[in-house]
Image 1: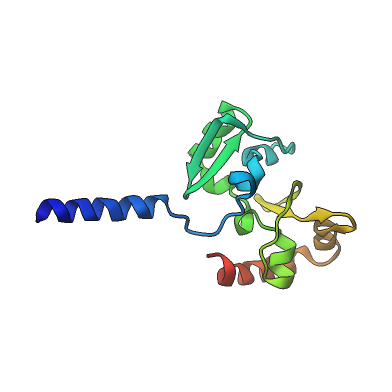
Image 2 (image 1 turned 180 degrees about the horizontal axis):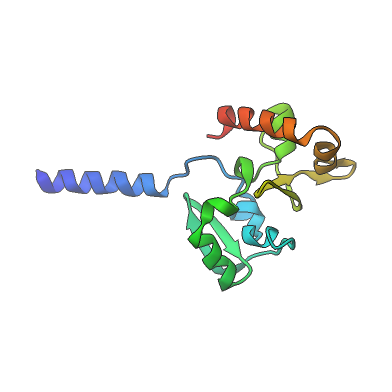
Length: 148
């Protein structure tokens, strides 16, 4: 009986360990469409490589090189995109999860924000032309309701 309990407890812990705490935008099977989240902080978004990948919070991340992978593993929360990698503007204005253009981004107060950009709809421009700080506060509020 104790062995069955231990097995059940182990399975529950494994399931919890592999489940996501929030909904990440995992288009193409990776967070940020496979872009290296560390590279944004070096001001050059780069596509990650399969050989430099890891799983964090139940989500796969790719990195451009071993150095960036190590930086992420040492401090993952520093590099995670806000709002699970969904468009910050859409989360703020509509409370919706919208895919992004991984090369349309902003680093604000040490956080990575991603934006939708197609045709005349560059939401980073809208974000910057309106009030980014007010939009960020609204996005934070909305994210609490839609993050799972």
